[in-house]
Image (cartoon, rainbow, N blue to C red; front, side, top):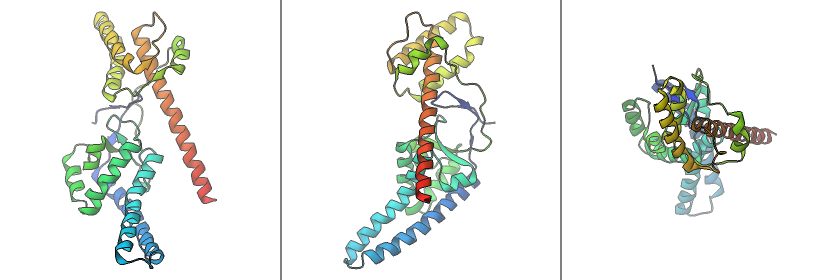
Length: 262
């Protein structure tokens, strides 16, 4: 049984790493799409650049090919937070190591390494790395801090931290920076274990974690705020903002898709 993953937004998920077979089928689907796109690009470039010399045609063709090979996974995984056509078909998604949604940086690293792993070396490094990793990571995943999970069937295992109502107004206007994943995980795990902890240990840990979190949050909470309430408010607000951002991104993708079809 896999261990639960605590996301950067402090949600505990039972994320199952994708099987090698499902990743292979997903990758094959994407490769077929990219191969078709490359064929179209090569034919188009050959026709459009017919007046250029051989070196110029080769340069234009190389740039156009890289745009397809790198651009396809980069654009899709950034816009959909971790899915390509192949992954969507197989019910998979690329996530960060902490279970949170990937962003442009992670998608770019994975796309660039794919050029070497999959295209230049025929997939051998990706195959070896995936088989050697408990989470099926290829080299691009190791460098990007990501892995592929089975999205279908993943379900919440515990409730996320709730927003203490006295801190709701403060949290909405607070500046919450990028809290390191390991710190968010520690806080989430502490909040889950707190009711069963010894009173003194609970208070000491809450105080220490609140001090660590305070480096990434401004302004400070209202005077007299209990450390546990402060921690819960920060993670709850961080999760709310991430949900709003994801919903906004999904709406943008839907609008762009609608315009493209029109």
